[in-house]
Length: 268
Image 1: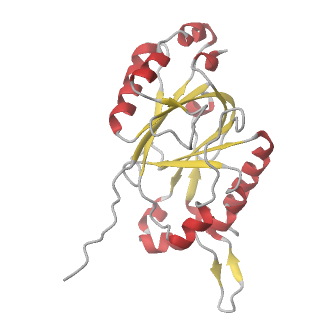
Image 2: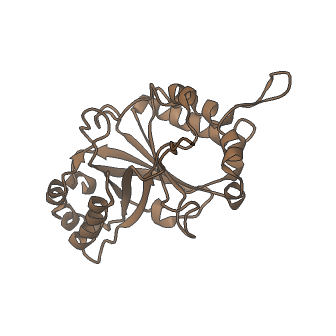
Image 3: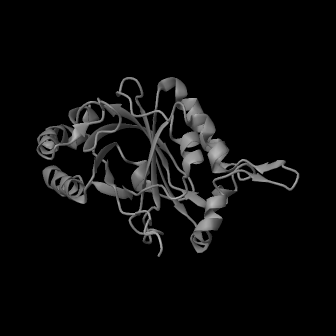
């Protein structure tokens, strides 16, 4: 007899970032769209006041501060004025919100949808969970952690050609035979941010993602005083001497926003 204890990789959460570019003359009309009513009908809770961690059915409003280009050219994201985040345990509410928002805004404003899913963690055993996730900061009210960073990225073809065991090794430190650390790996390079950066990642439903789409949509929130730490962690991850994984990473623009409480505030 054999054990039948294969762990599920089924999707446990669906999410989307709806990116909006709104001309000044269209802002008043956009602000009056019945988006709050749509969110209420779908049972979406505002992440500006999240309660006990991430709301299971969620919506958030992010107003642009600026964007920085990177490896992957994406002028549309660089020009994005506002982002709406929507998430649910099932695909239906996310799909309905995306479709209805496009109808409410009309042809002058076409939302760009950057979506993905959450699955159970692939490479996280008990020790890594306790190190990286057990004491991570959870989502705080908007005034406490007002900064939002959206960081889309892709892995190269060479990464996807590796088997899962080899990929796993890039998240851990590497040592020589004497025990001297050669590389920190992803986990240690990012460790300084665990205590102050709220983070979540949506993955493409297909891995790798289809041509023209992103493999990962990483998102972070932090307090004003922790913005430098966000950039320090990003620099450490990008340092291939510390983190060889990043030789296989191609980043899209880093979009910086401020969390606001309402749909209308996006257009003030």
